[in-house]
Image 1 (spheres, rainbow, N blue to C red):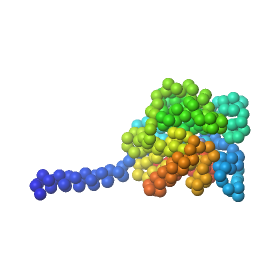
Image 2 (cartoon, rainbow, N blue to C red):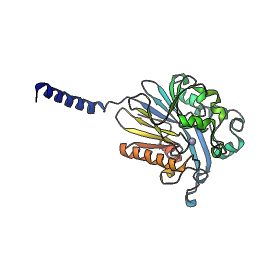
Image 3 (cartoon, protein in one colour):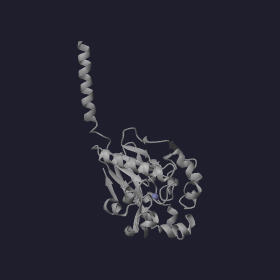
Image 4 (spheres, helix red, strand yellow):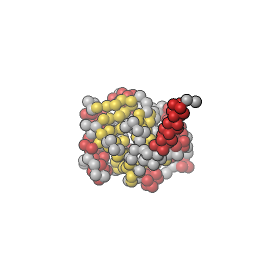
Length: 290
Ligand SMILES: [Zn+2]
């Protein structure tokens, strides 16, 4: 072997070692799990009709939002229920009497995303990126508070938001007034996964089924461990046991996405966070992860 070849081989070894050491130095991010109030109490079988009757019980569930601090800019994952719910009679006016009666939203003004940001020392103007998991009322409710952010959704979900299928329209889960003023915002319309800052710290995961363009997220922290934030790809633990959510665009793709998130979580040893799990929220909500 020529001297130059030996040197190149040694350099390759050094670089390979450098790469493995380097992977221990991930971007220092931290993420806060907040809730735009709660839904309920109602019977769990109202949401998951396939659940056996002997597992029926009343639940009160969080309306989940995540605030993620990245050195390159603040990211919000879902913006909760619209702030209009906090004015007298606001729910019936902004949603519909039927939806308010079914979901029984309870939202204090301090629960709304702008106040949650303030509580943590940020303002809505600090938010660089807003990721909406999907266009249902409890996830996209306050995107109009972020006119200057980059908004990340799947391209098909934008179509879904503007013209939902009749069966989804019938459920009143899309509130046009949540986003009719956001039509000219700056959108990054995806067709698949996306690594937001290109460093593997915050990755949007395409997870359709609940809606046409539903998406989840994986966070990778400084020490290399990761978590998977399912949002409505998995409402709660029961969905992992083979009982699908009652409201889905496609049960087939719903389970394919559930399997994918479960596999990512198992392979990476990543904790899986559900969208609306009463018990998990009680144990792990309202706190930072880093
Ligand atoms: Zn939801």
